[in-house]
Length: 111
Image 1 (tube, helix red, strand yellow):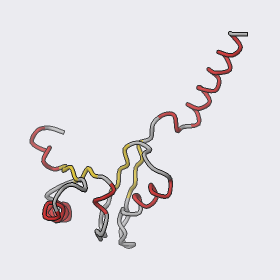
Image 2 (spheres, helix red, strand yellow; image 1 turned 90 degrees about the vertical axis):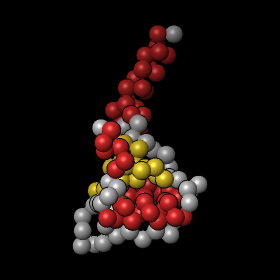
Image 3 (tube, helix red, strand yellow; image 1 turned 30 degrees about the vertical axis):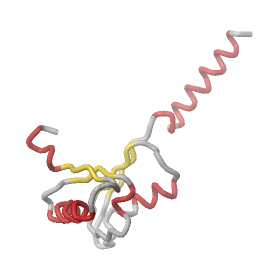
Image 4 (tube, helix red, strand yellow; image 1 turned 45 degrees about the vertical axis):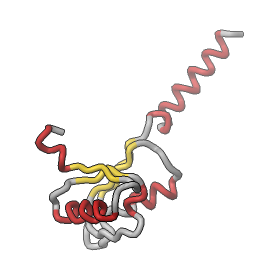
């Protein structure tokens, strides 16, 4: 992001104070903050109904936990939300096929 917009995204983790957590939640709801980069701890005890976009960077958890994170996108059924997962290439079938073919070639060349 350009320098003048970097304060629109905030970092949050469990070590931050309750006051900071509440302030950033208020800023997110009001639109002053555009997004929060956070650990799972942010959502503990939070009830925000209109989060329109949830982004998960990398596959860092089991599907059940991922589904729960994505479930934070617009819990108000009258709205539409989006959840994005940016997954590493090794989780895609075409990459798995390339890797398997490479392994077969390697075994065949060493016979």
